[in-house]
Length: 275
Length: 146
Image 1 (cartoon, rainbow over the protein chains, first blue to last red):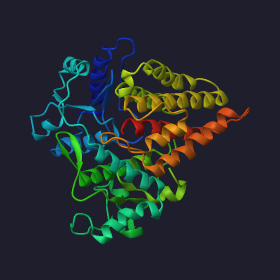
Image 2 (image 1 turned 90 degrees about the vertical axis):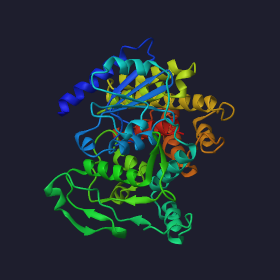
Image 3 (image 1 turned 90 degrees about the horizontal axis):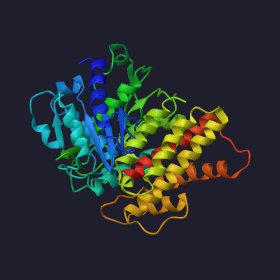
Image 4 (image 1 turned 120 degrees about the vertical axis):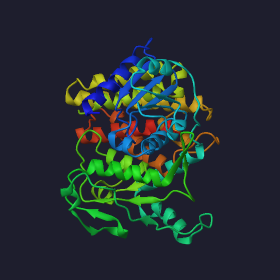
């Protein structure tokens, strides 16, 4: 599906939901600009205390079964705990269906409006302890000092996390395949603590987005649509970029959304300090 | 200002889809959020003041209503008190702001907001205004996820 077609489809679903509006009770946003999400729901509908987040898998997400669930997981961590999710998908039924409150084909535009008008809920609320741990890690990274990140390192060094095998404190990480051959060839040296340092990275946003999703995949798994923490506990990940674009109205968003997913961007800290 | 309407639209959806929507103040909160966007049409000086003003009122009221809807104690008398309340874990089913982050919000939001609102002639550069606005927005959405 082309980008234009994708946008038109989302607009059709959004328009259908907007028709529910009675006295300003419905608010709809396509590609919502959420302060903590560099990648999130494609469509959100808020009505009478119930938030619906809809996901339309991208072509890369469709190519890998379950990949869209990474985006669902980080979204559910950032959104109110009882957020209801919808998968918009014309593909065959798969195991991921159980993670959504509804799965609708592209033609089911009226059904989407009906779902937004209903009060049905089926998947689990995100556990408060998970939300707390994610918030605490975000705070540690946003603060950005050795003192704040230290406990995550100490916990790993002492191997005291449920007796599991110690893992690398701040793990070496690459962001998966780069956006272009030119940008890939610029990876040239090792940054602090073994993080991959990329120089002259022109397309930093897709890189951060992929790194965020990879962190989510490693840190969380979904149980009936609600993220739970994998293994022994949350860690801090590092992605070292030489440049992060700080233009625009919300220059903190790259760092904030990365930090929320557990990803520290040292160059951002060096350039702008605390969040 | 770029993307004011897309961010404020997201805020509108979030409060509409949160427990705040079931409280009587929701109409006033929605109006404040719409006024943030409308303020973008004013000249620079008035725009920054109006946006800070409407965003601050959105945040103030939303936090008070959130605290009440979650049963987190009596009505706070100030934004600082709201943040302090939200920085203490009181219920198993409601997370808390991390204390360090709560203090950062006090330093980065409460102090500059008070300076701006309570001093004649006070104004903000576009950069300062952007930072204050996005920090208030981030604070609101972080509370809504607790």
